[in-house]
Amino acid sequence: MQGCFFIGEKFIFMWNNLYPDLYLNSIYELEPQFLKDKGIRGIILDMDNTLVPWGSMDIDPEMIKWIKYLKDEGFRLCVVSNNSPVRGENLSSQVGLPGVWNANKPLRKAFRRALKKMELRPEETAAVGDQVFTDVLGGNRLGLFTVLVPQLTSKDFVWTRIMRRLEKIVLRRINTEKVEEK
Image (tube, rainbow, N blue to C red; front, side):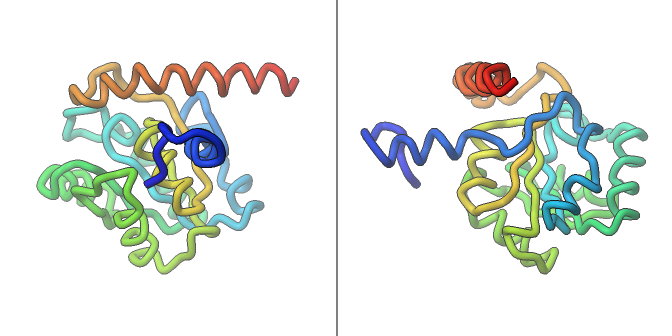
């Protein structure tokens, strides 16, 4: 893994991998036609604070409807989570999606396993999640189209709360660049 403690090209490489290709105000803003126009045929979805609130076993009916909509639009979907198989399979069975658990994101191995399950290549796949240092970094390292969405709840795993402080630096820079583009 490239380290951000290196100076020069390696630092720039790492920093650029923290930027999502798309930053939305809500997961529901993700437009299927937009993805199709980019050649995207599959979506890797994060679980905690993307599909369900952290620590919850219940998926919102609106989210179930949204997942069904994506399936009806022809997308192949897979959940990739650092969560345990027990918790992951519970969610997976509620929405009828395959999953990869104990993913160790941002490592690429779990993303590759999801690609294999969906029978897709990286350039045909989007990764959608709420964390820069797991979902976005992991997806970018493999060449996926990355989509960052806000977390569903402020509740988080202890380590994630620490990482969110670092994410704020990246998010401020993303928001600054959005303003400068206008």
